Amino acid sequence: MSAAPGARLEHADEDRLSVILPGDWARIPLETQDDANEEITRVIRRQFPRRDELATMRRDTREMLRAIARDARESDAVFLAASLELLPGLPFAAALLAHYIDVPNAELDLPLEVRLASAAPAGEVLELENGLAARELQRSVPGPEHPDAYTTIRLHYVLPTPFADRWVKWYANVPTDVDPELVGDLFDAILGTVRWYPERG
Image 1 (cartoon, rainbow, N blue to C red):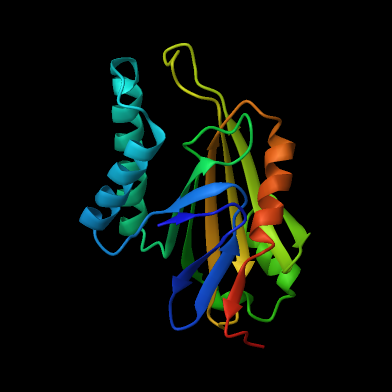
Image 2: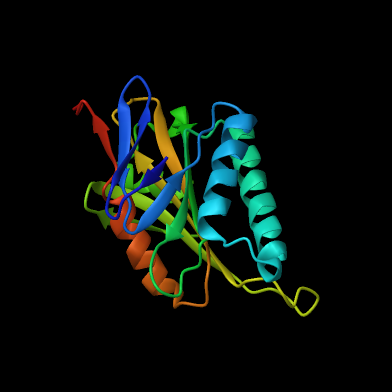
């Protein structure tokens, strides 16, 4: 399943989680690894012309996305999407996934801002369009032993949910040399569109 620019991608759960993604994204199904592999193969065929000079890139991208999908399934993720065209300078391989996490019982009496801060000790608490969220941002620069590797920006978000006992944690991996703060602003806007339908209190 691919999304048109600005499309809403949804996950069918007991409530429907939705997020609006800019640009062009492919939703990777997580029901089985075969389902994920089939969609990844379709996406690779769409994105990369079958030219000999692109064979290595096709193979590497396919294996990377399969590994991301495998890790997502093993972590009980409920959502995985890969960007096909996000913005100029943000390559195809950007990925966004989400899974639910338990809310620590020991912190239920603390203010939400304090609880979120403890969920992202290396980050900060932000006010997104949909409310408070915690965010951690890291920039990983490959060493000289990996000359062909990309610089990667990794973002982790924790968002409250309508459910009393769980939050949702989002992970974004973005291979790019773009200013990390600009990438952070972009994903702040994306995660600010997360909603649950039907809406709950």
